Image (cartoon, rainbow, N blue to C red; front, side, top):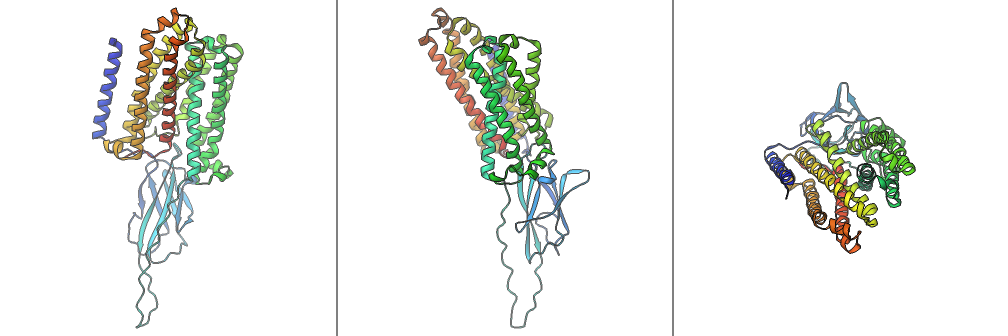
Length: 452
């Protein structure tokens, strides 16, 4: 092991220890727009039904997409001037019996579009019935269990699948173009690589368009058949999340211009400063708008936004490069390409993986906030699965590095002999498959409530 790699591993180990110390000491983090307080407070004993109930959330909410229900019937809601985190439910005219008044609420974060829900319970005095001396008043019946509104499972699952496909498209398209521009300009002329980039762009554009109605239906609790409701889509587009999704779609269209230049001019476009500036602008925009529906606004918004973008950028360069290497470079088995491209990508992968791990540590600290959240919540368990997949990929990457270190020169001397290169192809294929599994885990984590 070289001194440089030893220092990198030492740094990552130290960062992991610091994260563990932070998890042991830090309080739990808030992630979605959770209910902080209400007026009247939850559990209050009331003399009559209040005219209104005020709900205060942990962050700014989209009032048009929030809801409060009593006995399954929606109540009118409105915001509070100058307080974007407050929702007021109008209870005037609500007729309820004696016993408990239960309100089910739903909030939609204006920052990331995530949905949270819960309920409030209030006690009311029993009404005075007209009774005779022989008749004793009957006890008030126990309140029926309340159904707290939540997103339709089919909409949620479809949204998760679309987000996973969007992550994969971003990785293949942006990571693949960076690979061509920085490592393998000839890839702009290679048929398999051109097809891969084109398919990545098409998938990205389709997922960007599909996510708008799905996110609107998710926020508005519509069934899968009702995600194209114009009112729900209008409410979404009026908020920050809708703006980001619209911008993402426009960026994918701009990405088509970047792709067209590569398809027409190949290596000449890849070496052009103007094209590279365009790729950088489109790439950064797609990375930022793709990471927005995550949890990067938790605790420290700026640090979370930077860490989330760096994390996604690292995965994009890593996975996109692996995919082009596997599909475009290795099947050609050309000695001069193996010698240059594989060595260059090995260095890029090392930087990318380092960025993924470092930014992932920051995000884990922000989202989990405690060791209990890591070990005792479904979000923490899924995060541990993702960490395990990353560890498996790193082991395979070490196997690939060993081949590069000991067998690459032999493969070049043997003019790309298939038997010599085949073990490396298998290793890269396994790395790529597991890296795509990381994207699947990321897509599920983005839509899940963080452990706290």
